Image 1 (cartoon, helix red, strand yellow):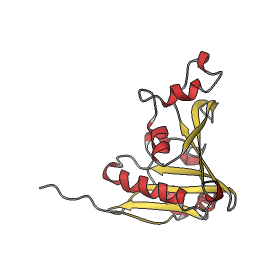
Image 2 (image 1 turned 180 degrees about the vertical axis):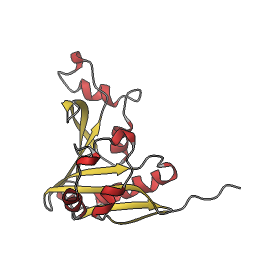
Image 3 (image 1 turned 45 degrees about the vertical axis):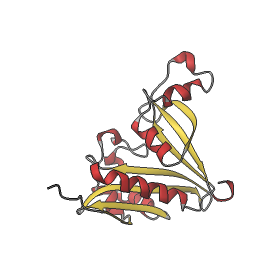
Length: 177
C-alpha cells in the first residue's frame, strides 16, 4: 500500500534558508545571481521582506517564496526558488505562492520567467508573446506564472546575465484587481 506523502508546512523564511536550499538545475541563477553570489546580507534582506516564506516537507526545504517590494506597500517582484524533485509538494507550493501574491495587499506584482525565444521575424509585435506562450513551446516557468494568476505583459529578448528570452508577467491587486 502506498503511503501518503508528508504535508508541506510553511513558515517565515530565515536568511539561512536562502543559503541552505538546493536549487533546481533550471535555477542555476536566481534573481540574476549565481547561488554562490548570494551572501548573508542579501539573504537577510530577502528574508526581511513582508512576504518571504519557506516550505518544508518531511524536514526537507522544498521551496522559498516571496515578493521583493520595490515600492513598499505598492509594487513588488515575485520570486521563487524550488528544490529539485519537488514532486508531491508542487501543488501545496503553487497554492502558497498564489496566496502570497493575492494576499500581499500590493497594487502591482511582477514576475519574470524564462521563456522560449522567438524567431527574429516575429519580434515586431505581440506575435512573439503568442509564439512563446503556445502550448508546444511554453516553458514550465511561464506555465507556472499563468497558474498563479499572472498575465503575460512583454517578451524580453536577451535578458539577464545569460542573455536569454524572459517573459514579464504582471498581476494587479488592491484597487486595480
